Amino acid sequence: MSFTLHGLAVSSGIAIGRAHLVSHATLEVAHYKVREKAVPTEIERFETAVATVRTELEALRGEASLPGSPSELAAFVDIHAMILDDPLLSELPKDLIRERRCNAEWALVQQMELLVEQFEEIEDSYLRERKHDVVQVVERVLKALMGKARKVAKRGKDEDLIVVAHDLSPADTIQFKTLKIGGFVTDLGGATSHTAIVARSLAIPAVVGLHHARPLVREDDLVIVDGTRGVLIVEPDPRVLEEYRLRKSELELERSKLKRLKTARSATLDGEEVALYANIELPQDIEQVKEVGADGIGLFRTEFLFMNRADLPDENEQYEAYKAVAKAMAGRPVTIRTLDIGGDKNAGALAGTERQAPNPALGLRAIRYCLAEPQIFLTQLRAILRASHYGKIRLLIPMLAHASEIEQTLAMIEQAKAQLRETRHKFDENIKIGGMIEIPAAALALGPFVKRLQFLSLGTNDLIQYTLAIDRTDEAVAHLYDPLHPAILRLISQTIAAGARMDVPVAVCGEMAGDPTLTRLLIGMGLRQFSMHPSLILEVKQQVVMADAEQLTTKVGRLLRLDEPDKLREQVERLNA
Ligand code: PEP
Ligand code: MG
Image 1 (spheres, rainbow, N blue to C red):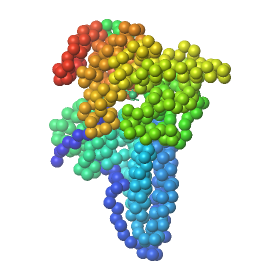
Image 2 (image 1 turned 180 degrees about the horizontal axis):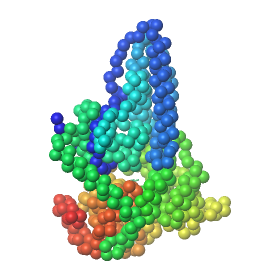
Image 3 (image 1 turned 135 degrees about the horizontal axis):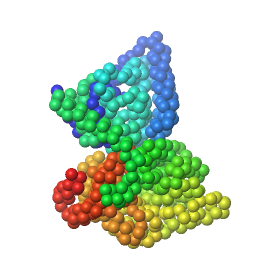
Image 4 (image 1 turned 90 degrees about the vertical axis):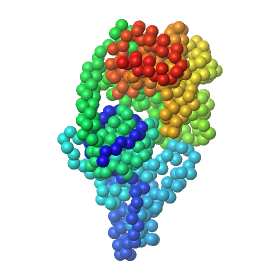
C-alpha cells in the first residue's frame, strides 16, 4: 500500500530505491538466564562484540581522515571510541553476566540505561546530548552480538539504497560514502543536527523528523526520498514513480549543466557584478570552495575549531588554520568571523567559563562572550592578524548591537596589533573590520555601524530568529521561521540601502543568500555580495546570470511597500516566473 510521510527537508535532491532498515539500540532485547557453565562463553561473546566494534570504529577513523570526508567526523568517531572504552560499558556488563547469569545483550542494555541516566543529569547541554552517542555505541555492540552486521541489500541497477533509521549518528552517516547510499530518512533529528549537516556536505538527499518511518516502512520497500520537499513516499503508485524518475533525471542533467557555470562571470544580464562567496567551517572545506570557483570566503565560522575537543586551540594552532585558508584562496577575500560561541553552539573546552544561561540565544553569546573573556578574544585576534600577512583577510564581528561594543572591539583589535608589533610579528596594518547585522536593533540603528566599520554582513538566520522571536533550533516553532515576513524584508533592504548611501559594502551570509528562489529578490534590493554553502553557489549563479538588475530594482521597490504576507509572497514568486 502506498503512503507518504512528511518531515524536515535537510538535504535536497531525489533518491529512489529500496529501504534498508537500521535498528536502534532501544530495541527490545531478550532477557534470559545462562547456565553456570556457559557464563565464560557469554563473557567471551561480549568481549568479541566489543572488539569487533572497536575494529569498526578504527576503520571509520581511517576513512574520516581521508581527504573529502566531512571534517567533524573524526572527532565524533573519537567520542564513540572513548565511550566504548568506558569501563561502565566495556567491563561492568561482564560483572552483571557473572553475578546474574544473564545474557550479554541484556547486561549491556542495563548498563547503557544507567549511563544514559547519568548523562541526563548533566547541566551542560552539549555533554548531556552525548547520551545519544552512548545509545549509538551500544547499538553497534548489540548488532555485533546478534550477528547483524550491516548488510547492503540487493538492489536493481537503477535503484539507490535508502537507509531508514530511528536516529543516525554522524559516524554512521560517513559510511554512506563508501557504501554508495542514495539517501536516508530518520524519525528523530532537527534541521541543524550534525547528521543533517553531514548529509548536506555529502550531498545525499535526506529527510529527518519523520516520527514514524522506522516502524512503518519494511525492509526492501520501494521508497522515494524527496529531500527538497521533506517527503518520503513508500511503495509509490506507478504514475508517481514515473514522475519522480523524470524529475530525478532532470535534476541530474541540471546539476551537470551547472558545472559549466564555474568559470562564467557572475554578473546580471545588464552587467551588474554579483560576488558569490562561500561559507566554511574548517580549513578542509576549501577544496569544495575551489571546485565551484567561489569569489572568496564570505564567512569562516571559526567556532567549529573550538568544538568537539577537550582543550582550546592556542594562538599558533589558530594562526596555522587561518593562514592555510588565506594562502589557499590566493589573494581572494577571506572573511574570518571571530568566535560565535554560545546559543546553540557550545564548546566543551569553554564549559568552565560558560555559565548555564537561562536563555542561551539571548545570553552571553558571540561578541558578548569574547568581550567578557578578553584573553580568549585577544588570542584569536592575534592569530587572525598574523595570518593576514598571507592573504586578503577581513575580520568580521558577530552579534553586535551597541556602539559601545563596536568601540570595545576596535580597542581590543588595536591592543592585539600593538602586542604583535612588540613581538615583531608581521600583519596587515589595514585589515578591514566588519560587523554582522543579525540583531534587529543593529539593523534599525545603523549609524554607529556604518561610521565605525568598513563592511557589513547580514546574518539572516539570527536576524529572523530575533525579529520574529522564534528559536531557530526549535522544531515546534519552525513553521513560523519566515524569511519573507514583511518585517524581515524591510530590515534587510534598509540595511542594504544604508550601506549603499554610506559606501559601506553589505553582504548576506545567512541561509537566505543560498536560496536560489530569493536571489532575484535580493538583487532587486541592491545586494551585490552573497555568501553561502559552496554546494549552492552554482545554482545561485544561474539565477544571477539570468537576472535583469534594473528591472528587478523597480519590481522589488514596489513589492516592499506591501505588508500583506500573501500578496508579498505572490509577488516574490512572480519575480522568479
Ligand atoms: C546568521 O546568523 O545568519 C549567520 C550567518 O550566522 P550563524 O548561522 O553562524 O549564526
Ligand atoms: Mg548568526
